[in-house]
Image (cartoon, rainbow, N blue to C red; front, side):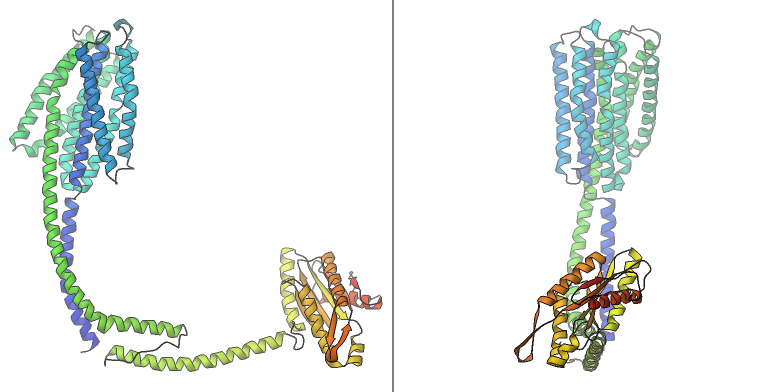
Length: 581
């Protein structure tokens, strides 16, 4: 069977299997998206947040009553206030613990807001206690309004917490979106109902008319309450067939809007005309606050229904997950069988062939190429790789020989055959580059030209072999004393030239003097154990602005001949002249 036909059969089998597997996965993902596994925990946290917001709002009732009662507070009222605060603290602590236990919410804004509310309750309660402990005639309107506002101002933070956790539940299960909107609307209704009642506390305590700002604020809250009333009626319409929801909505209409809300409207009419309400904050607590319980009951009923929906979605997702896992296991088993076959006939030979080709490209000709086992495309490739390896070995052998020859030719063309340092041509090539850099960046560069004194006498006396040994020794001695950046070259005969980058005339002269002393102190051994000492004359020139290499070496040459004329074994510095006087 050919490899192409084998691939086609395997592809059809894989396609059929993974189409079924992909459809199951898509269905699972779709249902997971619609009813996320995190919806139930998210709803439970939301319920804790709603409970905490309710308890903080409910705490305002006994707090307002305490600020309107006589001092000292009666024991029952004081007990109700302490109990309300305990419940608020417990609800907040439970909510904070739940948020901190969720890794996704430990660094969330919701947890930060809960902490802020916990921190803000202390100062707010202190304001309430400060007013409650004052004599009734000392409780100014400003202090009462400030105390009421300090409690009311904490609720926007809790509203944001509820909003964040509601969004978390919505992302987990978008099917709960309408129910979540209804729950948030009912919770907001409960909060606005509490706020509008708190707006009457200061006028009731002071027995005064409502101020213009209070009337405006109460009107704004009335408007929000009416909007929420209409919105909730539309959201809960889908539950109209359920008797429990119909009864809960009817209770809100009767207990709050027909009784509690009308009571506030009665107080509003009095507050607009006079300040004698005939009602105390404690009366407001006893009559108005219980009317809001119907709103809380409707909210709890909605939350319970949402939790039931979320649990049903979670169960359906679990059943689908079991189905998909079963299909996945079967698919994996069949896939494993196919992969074993593909690995033996296709993948392994292809990978091996790829590695061999890559190795041949990198020049790894020592690797072994296995013999082809099957008469298919892979086998043909292996046989072709054997031929390719042989051809590449022949080509690499020729290339190495050519590179060695080129390297040898380059070295012989750039170095002096005797001393091993650069020759004159290579020196000029390198020096031109260095001078270009020096001119571009304004750097100093100098040239030292030196000649072995009486070298002809050495050749005549000791022979040319001794002269060659002297040339080699001089070049080695000088090279050992130079920096890596310095360039030494044989200029011709017994004459050498040095390029000193980053060196001005004074520095170059110091280098030349150092070299002169080193050569004078050096003893050179030639054949037959003869020892010879030599000296050298030096001419030093530093690069001037716009100067060419030929002019620079010419001036160094003039300085060298001046050193010879003045007695040899000395260093002379070049001036601007181009001819020896």
